[in-house]
Image 1 (tube, rainbow, N blue to C red):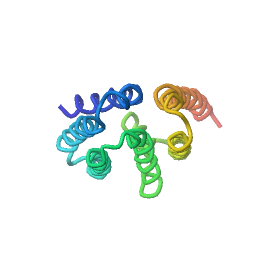
Image 2: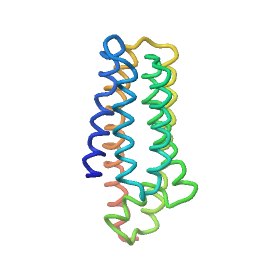
Image 3: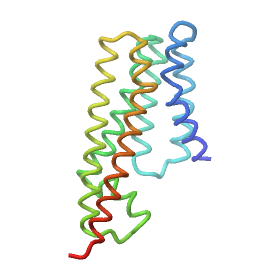
Image 4: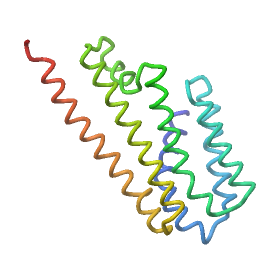
Length: 185
């Protein structure tokens, strides 16, 4: 059930910019608040014991409450900034309190990571934190100074393309690091 809710949140996140583009003229922000809030509440209840799920759900639900109470369409554009800020926090806090998030994922596949891989995963986590910091700044700038069409283009297409490029680039670099670490000294 929690995987289904997670998938629904991902799909909602992917479609959100286009729904906002259409919905700012045709739908109530309170409807967005109700739908997003319902998804986040269900996810929080199904993932209650997972680290980070409570504070992320609380932040998203607080946003939905403000959106619902204010009923202000301009607030709809701040949801991607909130998501990027939360991802920045997840990656950044993992660097402080450890282990870095990329290392956690790598250890799912190989619990006995060599030292070079541990150092590499720390750098990867730093890159992702930097990406989410920059992405938050870009989305914030678009919220403040750009027309809705630019915001929609960036948050609905360009940012996902950048995430895909970062994933692909990291995968290519990881292959080279693996090859290098396997060579005899």
